[in-house]
Image 1 (tube, rainbow, N blue to C red):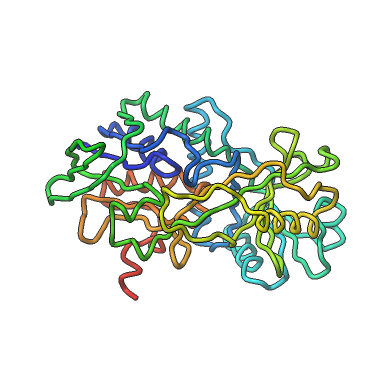
Image 2 (cartoon, rainbow, N blue to C red; image 1 turned 135 degrees about the vertical axis):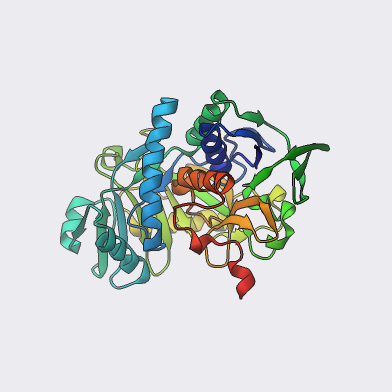
Length: 374
């Protein structure tokens, strides 16, 4: 069996690694370099959360992903996942808080729940409000995204995968017996193909043009007045929802700055090749206001800004599976800003679908045809 993986970013890198581990003849196509920051990879860190506010159905996937992250660490020799614990902060009885508590209760996740007074003493960096719920998920931490992608692709290459850098796939045609790929104006023939090119997915699969939309994401970093208060051992990763903002962050990873970034303010992009990297004054002011209002002793001016993008679906769940009209094509896209932590288990799922036509993992909420039913 000959398999192609189109896109070697977040998901494609893990798919090519998993296929190579199963001794499948696999070729990976990447239009840019490996570990590039032009889409969903980049920004130094990604959160890993097990008590998942996006839904309890993710917890088994996250636990499988955690094990696979450790596998990739052992195989590559690189440290990818650091467990710091993860805070959820939000108003009591809101959807995000209730979803996290459901995950904890249904799956016995190691955690702690604090009163406001306790939280203020334990986590003085945050300005906790009187009606906040504060929950620590002890099975959370952060990932190194660029290193993870490069590690997975390098391991795949060691196992025999062919890696084609700087080759943009222009067309995919399923003839029923084979799949013909056109890349850099040359044609290649495969038995099955995984399309994992993120924000560019509708270029190859036009049916998803109105379903998967790329959005622009701004990452921002700030310098605390006292860096000792924002270390990995006393400042867990966090996700917080207030009346004004939805945001997340990590401790300092380089002992100079902390990452604090907004969620939910992303704007749609008409053309992923024309991502606007300039950050406007009004966008910077919003980031600064967030830091001033909800943190103690952090200089409110961002010292580093970077712009990325991710592909979003209307329900903000990914599209993963074989196409109804092309059973030789598997699609992986639309992770809607919260997919990186799941990447290795998604690679395993894609490999399952290629080799067995099914997977033991529950993925019905990712069914590619679900939007056609509405």
